Amino acid sequence: MKEPPLGFLLVDTARLYRARIDRAFEQAGLGLTAGEARTLAHVNINPGLRQTALAVRMSVEPMTLVGFLDRLEAQGLVVREPDPTDRRAKIVRLTEAAAPLLVRVAAAAANAREEALTGLSEAERDVFRTMLEQIRANLCECQRAEA
Image (cartoon, rainbow, N blue to C red; front, side, top):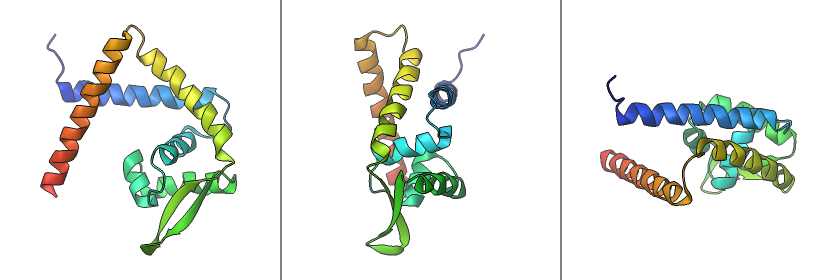
Protein backbone atom coordinates (compact mmCIF):
# COMPACT_ATOMS: atom_id res chain seq x y z
CA MET A 1 0.00 0.00 0.00
CA LYS A 2 1.27 3.46 -0.91
CA GLU A 3 2.18 5.83 1.94
CA PRO A 4 -0.46 8.52 2.44
CA PRO A 5 0.71 12.07 1.72
CA LEU A 6 1.74 14.19 4.70
CA GLY A 7 -1.22 16.53 4.21
CA PHE A 8 -3.65 13.62 4.39
CA LEU A 9 -2.05 12.32 7.59
CA LEU A 10 -2.06 15.74 9.19
CA VAL A 11 -5.68 16.53 8.35
CA ASP A 12 -6.97 13.06 9.18
CA THR A 13 -5.08 13.00 12.49
CA ALA A 14 -6.46 16.44 13.37
CA ARG A 15 -9.99 15.25 12.53
CA LEU A 16 -9.66 12.15 14.71
CA TYR A 17 -8.07 14.13 17.54
CA ARG A 18 -10.85 16.71 17.51
CA ALA A 19 -13.46 13.95 17.55
CA ARG A 20 -11.73 12.35 20.56
CA ILE A 21 -11.58 15.68 22.38
CA ASP A 22 -15.27 16.26 21.67
CA ARG A 23 -16.14 12.83 23.09
CA ALA A 24 -14.01 13.56 26.16
CA PHE A 25 -15.95 16.79 26.74
CA GLU A 26 -19.26 14.98 26.35
CA GLN A 27 -18.17 12.17 28.71
CA ALA A 28 -16.94 14.63 31.36
CA GLY A 29 -20.47 15.68 32.30
CA LEU A 30 -19.66 19.37 31.95
CA GLY A 31 -23.23 20.40 31.20
CA LEU A 32 -21.93 21.87 27.94
CA THR A 33 -21.90 20.67 24.37
CA ALA A 34 -18.50 19.82 22.92
CA GLY A 35 -18.70 23.02 20.84
CA GLU A 36 -19.38 25.13 23.93
CA ALA A 37 -16.48 23.50 25.79
CA ARG A 38 -14.18 24.12 22.79
CA THR A 39 -15.36 27.73 22.72
CA LEU A 40 -14.46 28.22 26.38
CA ALA A 41 -11.04 26.66 25.78
CA HIS A 42 -10.39 28.89 22.76
CA VAL A 43 -11.46 32.06 24.59
CA ASN A 44 -9.17 31.07 27.46
CA ILE A 45 -6.20 30.47 25.13
CA ASN A 46 -6.94 33.56 23.00
CA PRO A 47 -8.25 36.22 25.41
CA GLY A 48 -9.67 39.42 23.97
CA LEU A 49 -10.31 38.14 20.45
CA ARG A 50 -13.07 39.55 18.34
CA GLN A 51 -15.97 37.19 17.81
CA THR A 52 -15.17 36.92 14.07
CA ALA A 53 -11.50 36.06 14.74
CA LEU A 54 -12.59 33.46 17.29
CA ALA A 55 -14.78 31.75 14.67
CA VAL A 56 -11.80 31.61 12.31
CA ARG A 57 -9.53 30.16 15.04
CA MET A 58 -12.12 27.53 15.85
CA SER A 59 -12.79 26.71 12.18
CA VAL A 60 -16.53 27.18 12.63
CA GLU A 61 -19.04 29.34 10.83
CA PRO A 62 -19.72 32.67 12.56
CA MET A 63 -23.39 31.74 13.08
CA THR A 64 -22.37 28.47 14.72
CA LEU A 65 -20.15 30.40 17.13
CA VAL A 66 -22.99 32.83 17.87
CA GLY A 67 -25.10 29.91 19.08
CA PHE A 68 -22.30 28.66 21.34
CA LEU A 69 -21.72 32.17 22.71
CA ASP A 70 -25.44 32.81 23.26
CA ARG A 71 -25.69 29.69 25.43
CA LEU A 72 -22.42 30.38 27.28
CA GLU A 73 -23.47 33.96 27.91
CA ALA A 74 -26.86 32.81 29.22
CA GLN A 75 -24.96 30.62 31.73
CA GLY A 76 -22.82 33.57 32.80
CA LEU A 77 -19.59 32.03 31.47
CA VAL A 78 -18.69 34.62 28.81
CA VAL A 79 -19.49 38.22 27.98
CA ARG A 80 -19.39 40.00 24.65
CA GLU A 81 -18.21 43.59 24.88
CA PRO A 82 -17.92 46.25 22.19
CA ASP A 83 -14.43 46.47 20.68
CA PRO A 84 -13.03 49.87 21.68
CA THR A 85 -11.54 50.27 18.19
CA ASP A 86 -14.74 49.26 16.34
CA ARG A 87 -18.03 49.41 18.21
CA ARG A 88 -19.68 47.14 15.62
CA ALA A 89 -17.30 44.29 16.57
CA LYS A 90 -17.57 42.28 19.78
CA ILE A 91 -14.72 41.09 22.01
CA VAL A 92 -15.36 37.80 23.82
CA ARG A 93 -14.19 37.49 27.42
CA LEU A 94 -14.52 34.83 30.09
CA THR A 95 -16.24 35.58 33.36
CA GLU A 96 -14.96 34.46 36.75
CA ALA A 97 -17.71 31.83 36.77
CA ALA A 98 -15.95 30.05 33.89
CA ALA A 99 -12.79 29.29 35.91
CA PRO A 100 -13.97 26.09 37.67
CA LEU A 101 -15.47 24.77 34.44
CA LEU A 102 -12.25 25.48 32.55
CA VAL A 103 -10.38 23.27 35.03
CA ARG A 104 -12.72 20.41 34.11
CA VAL A 105 -12.46 21.18 30.38
CA ALA A 106 -8.65 21.12 30.63
CA ALA A 107 -8.72 17.82 32.54
CA ALA A 108 -10.96 16.19 29.91
CA ALA A 109 -8.69 17.48 27.13
CA ALA A 110 -5.59 16.25 28.98
CA ASN A 111 -7.03 12.74 29.23
CA ALA A 112 -7.79 12.66 25.51
CA ARG A 113 -4.35 14.09 24.70
CA GLU A 114 -2.69 11.41 26.83
CA GLU A 115 -4.57 8.72 24.92
CA ALA A 116 -3.46 10.23 21.62
CA LEU A 117 0.18 10.41 22.68
CA THR A 118 0.36 6.93 24.21
CA GLY A 119 3.58 5.21 23.19
CA LEU A 120 5.56 8.43 22.70
CA SER A 121 8.32 9.28 25.15
CA GLU A 122 8.59 12.76 26.67
CA ALA A 123 11.46 13.52 24.30
CA GLU A 124 9.40 12.40 21.30
CA ARG A 125 6.47 14.51 22.50
CA ASP A 126 8.74 17.55 22.77
CA VAL A 127 10.13 16.99 19.26
CA PHE A 128 6.62 16.47 17.90
CA ARG A 129 5.42 19.75 19.46
CA THR A 130 8.46 21.62 18.13
CA MET A 131 7.85 20.23 14.65
CA LEU A 132 4.16 21.17 14.70
CA GLU A 133 5.01 24.68 15.89
CA GLN A 134 7.51 25.07 13.05
CA ILE A 135 5.03 23.81 10.45
CA ARG A 136 2.39 26.21 11.80
CA ALA A 137 4.86 29.11 11.74
CA ASN A 138 5.82 28.27 8.15
CA LEU A 139 2.19 28.18 7.06
CA CYS A 140 1.41 31.44 8.87
CA GLU A 141 4.33 33.07 7.08
CA CYS A 142 3.04 31.77 3.73
CA GLN A 143 -0.37 33.17 4.54
CA ARG A 144 1.09 36.60 5.42
CA ALA A 145 3.16 36.62 2.22
CA GLU A 146 0.05 35.89 0.13
CA ALA A 147 -2.00 38.65 1.77
